[in-house]
Amino acid sequence: DTEVTQTPKHLVMGMTNKKSLKCEQHMGHRAMYWYKQKAKKPPELMFVYSYEKLSINESVPSRFSPECPNSSLLNLHLHALQPEDSALYLCASSLWDRDGNEQFFGPGTRLTVL
Amino acid sequence: SQQGEEDPQALSIQEGENATMNCSYKTSINNLQWYRQNSGRGLVHLILIRSNEREKHSGRLRVTLDTSKKSSSLLITASRAADTASYFCATDVTGANSKLTFGKGITLSVRP
Image 1 (cartoon, rainbow over the protein chains, first blue to last red):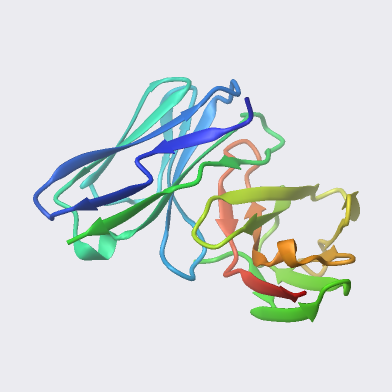
Image 2: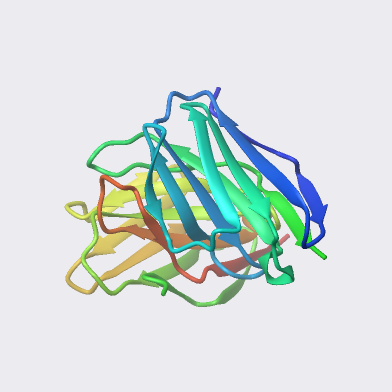
């Protein structure tokens, strides 16, 4: 299985809502990532988990809260978002070694904040 | 800030022609990767070239890396309409952390 799955595909939420994005992989990868991508822009790294521990937080606002319950799952909890947070949220995974590796991306969750 | 900068920003070619895309970056890297993204979907990894490599091939793809000029090129030979997509170069400066920084991207249109 060489697939990264993300749910939901689309999400519309109000600024007072709490929602979660989910990501799953069964490739045995020990690194997982969250990216944010605005229209016609490149992906921007948000968080990196390695061996279920947060290793990189790119100064993301606290209204985004990542969680890695186990080596196959990655969640992104959303609370009190702003309309400018509307974007495509991409999850990715990779092997974790000192040489650097390709990342496998999921199809993304299209988030709209009203 | 983006590490990689691709050029051209947009490229339109006829099916069967070759497409060449360039990427320049600013700091030393561990490796450089190219990804493709079809409209509104996830990214697909195309090829990875390490800092000690100069050229790699994968099917119709050829990637070069010139660390002295801090630049890379992606050549797609015999393009097909299905190659229409956005292409991003991504630099990994650390290796272990696999922290990728993406360039702005190139929009490739292949006309049937």
